[in-house]
Image (cartoon, rainbow, N blue to C red; front, side, top):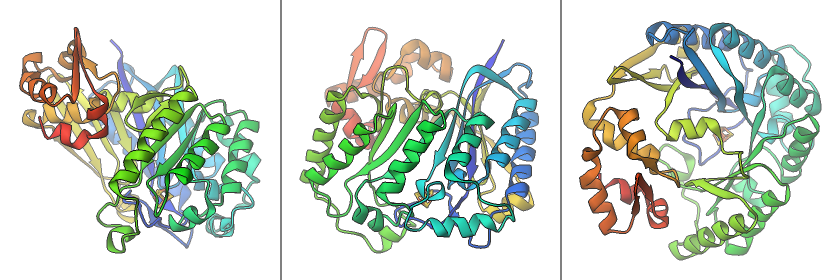
Length: 398
Ligand code: SF4
């Protein structure tokens, strides 16, 4: 029997840390140790394969997601080698989705701070390829989906957000990606930005729609602990303004045939992200790279892996901690993922994916139905629009 998996690969470096970012991303002005990091990633994968007790011959990887950090600081040659080595270790599905997050500031000429990333990369001793060569190189290496971190098309907002690219370089990167043969592109866009009003937010969204990507991730800026914005909070739109933006954005996306399938994910038909769907459906995934997480089912138990977080420590030894998910956490963990999905889940999926009986859901269902936060259909449940909007409140009912 085949065991289906996704593979997440974390790249922990960025040209500059954005003030809102709480990801495991670090500035490294003296250059990226590309070769050593890729070796560490492969050692990490080997230990996961050994430890997970899943014969790699029966494992099939349906999606790979390279996230960060900024994976596009790595060279096409490095990515090609990495993907090739992965192919030698695990079976990849014929129609595998291979996504790479791309920061336009690490790719496209014309970025007002592109020189920063250039100086950072050139420390490797290799000549930096032209933007189009770089994108074509990723495509040839096997990347077939790009996720562009645009965040806004407004130059002053990009400065507020500490981004290293301009609106023009984001658009240029998108066009070059199309020219390089990418037919599946996501644009990451934020709303609820400092002092943003409804018109500005809708202009941003319209810009993204006009480019005609296959997928848009449209999510609200939130202030997270351990960020610069947490210590020096910017002035954000009030609750009423945020609500207005949210409602208008959903309607604009729908009018333009972007179908919502997750809290913040909107796609053209058949372009839902396989990787994220597997994650939100509580599927098995391996996570390699500094600070990466993995999770998979072993019989009736669920095993979790967490990798060494700091890049320097990870490079020294890519250690992993493996633990079992306590059965008391299982219901909440399952709902934290699946209640993000517009279609929710079926009771059959719930029983297959958790090993729990559907009766375990009943108290949550009754509480959530009373508050109109879910809809119960014949074969399962799904969040209502209220439940999607107030997901944290919905999960408090578990
Ligand atoms: S580019 Fe992305 S990962 Fe890097 S600091 Fe900014 S938000 Fe974080």
